[in-house]
Image (cartoon, rainbow, N blue to C red; front, side, top):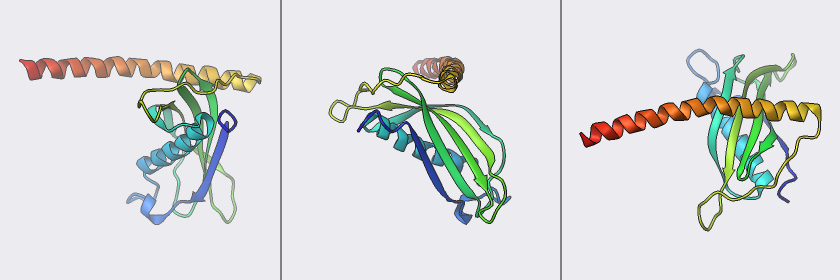
Length: 167
C-alpha cells in the first residue's frame, strides 16, 4: 500500500506530564509529537522503516495548554529518491469550545531505510498536482536549502574538533 497515504492526522489531549513550570507544553514534547506523526506518515508512504534526517523552519507560534485538544497533521509535499518531505502543522483548542489555533509549523524530512542493508532505499515518487501542492513543494525545498548552511557549519566544527584531537 505504499505511495497511497499522503496525509495523516493525530488527535489527543495535552496531559499534565507534557507541560513546563509555566503550564504550557514543552517545545521538546511538541517536537516529539511532530516526529511521531512524521514517522507514521513516512512509513505509510514508503512502506519501509524510516529515519528523521532534518527538521526545518520550525516555529512555535502559540502555546499549548494542559487539556487542550491537540491536532498534529502532516502532508507529504516533496519526494526525492529516498527522502520524503512533510509539512507538519500543530494546532490546539479548548475541547469545550473555542477556535482552533496554529501552535507550531515545520518541514520534517525522513529517509526510507532498507531493513537488510541499512542503506537508504527508493520511495514512491510524488508529483505536485494543484497550485497549493507546487507552493508547498517549493517551500519545502527552500526550508531545506537553509539547512544546508547549518550542515556546512557542523562540518566546520567537526573538522575543528578533529584537528584539536589530533594536535
